Image (tube, rainbow, N blue to C red):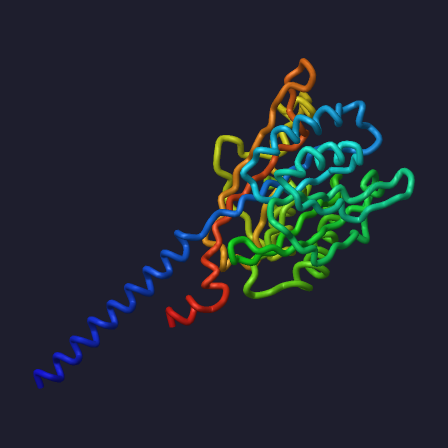
Length: 311
């Protein structure tokens, strides 16, 4: 009887030790994971009106600001101007050698690309892109759509999608565009082991609860809180490029996540870039930039080793 009790006690000790080691392994897999930092920014480089917004001057200052950034990936919207994109590309080439886009290029006069342009410190693979089938008003000048990439960050695979939705109050158009994104890109390349990060200018106010929730529902994506003092991305009260007496502050730029079980933590914050343009201090775009710091679970969890260990 004593031997039996000793054997049972030994099994309990070993089981507890094994469980503790598994728990420590899980904790280490999270603590040791590094942060992927992504910046998403509508930079207001519209076509044909560069002189009015001092686009070339702003492009030079934006490049000076970003070339020392610790973000691994910068995702631009409204990078329409070829001249300004060239300025940015050359000045950012050393820090961000991998450059993609702009998506949906167009050589026709009075038409332009989607304005979606990505620069990166790590290589990305473009999986596919789409041009929206429906657009309205001035948006018809641009070949707006979305583009999906896949990357690997220290063993953690991820997919990154960027888009720029319809600009005016056409909620039904934006719903259609979200549906096209999900059907033709997110679902088409969905992998249960790979999180999908969705960023861009959605032109949907977070305070418009009905349409904001509808966007998340269609995309099957989740959002999170914004940390820091600035809680909005489009500021018609204080931003020098869009200030007006009846303006408001709102969030219309997002970094969303889909299939997020392999993301341990994501922290979002808004970056306001303000500098002298010539002799006058100015915001560098009509939008503020949204930044996300993403901690993936260890690559062990992606290849099944950790999952097997905790069974």
